[in-house]
Length: 263
Ligand SMILES: NC(=O)c1ccc[n+]([C@@H]2O[C@H](COP(=O)([O-])OP(=O)(O)OC[C@H]3O[C@@H](n4cnc5c(N)ncnc54)[C@H](OP(=O)(O)O)[C@@H]3O)[C@@H](O)[C@H]2O)c1
Picture 1 (tube, rainbow, N blue to C red):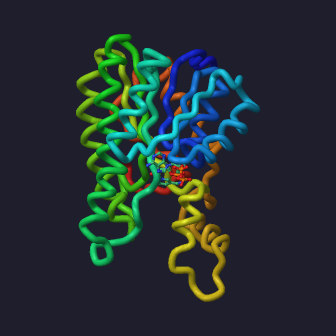
Picture 2: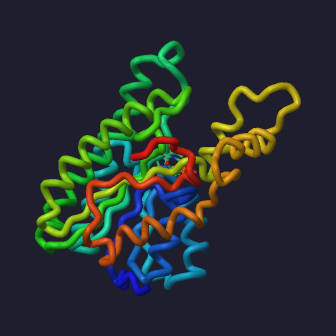
């Protein structure tokens, strides 16, 4: 299937590693011009070298900016306006929020999670939509979490911010569908990245290794294992394509069956 992504301009936020990087790989393989982002030039350089095995160097732009801050978003917009003039695809993503519950989180943790996992997605989307509207075409995919549909124990900040994002996405997807701007969320369940390893390292029992914990995290997933990033990026690439021209306002699980609900 030709996804017709050649020479589309795509910004993939928080993409030097993990799920964001898997999306960058999938879009690069389809011939898109990709802008990868993280807070570290060093991590971006490593990511760029890996991507150069699948696409030309001149199709990769690295953008070092902390997207949890409005200043970081301004850096992105400046680059897009000066170097690209238009953006076709926006993949919103960020580092995961702090783990914990009501009794071990402070108010400042709530503020930080709202900045990092909700407000920055909204800032950037609000700024990019007028550009997509002018072209009468756009794709926005938000990397979210299975917590959007089924709250996760000990991840209260994820449960709150992802639910807020779902309300925002449904609202704007309704408004801009008529402009051929499709806005969707993808919900990873448990996909092996640094973030999952960090979560797996919390509260290990005596003698339990991180690998033991990762193995046991697979047992309650119907597919009986964690996912790999290579099983994530291609779905996002599809949602970014012309072929996904009638899919908007959805939250699509990529979770090996983890979520137990019907919707
Ligand atoms: N993996 C899963 O199974 C899973 C499940 C549910 C939800 N999620 C969510 O999916 C998102 C991505 O997770 P992941 O597993 O890919 O995490 P990861 O492996 O830790 O990767 C995070 C990426 O984001 C970058 N980053 C972090 N904060 C940033 C910021 N403020 N500005 C710009 N870049 C930033 C990191 O690069 P630098 O450190 O260089 O900045 C890195 O490239 C997270 O929100 C996570 O909670 C993941």
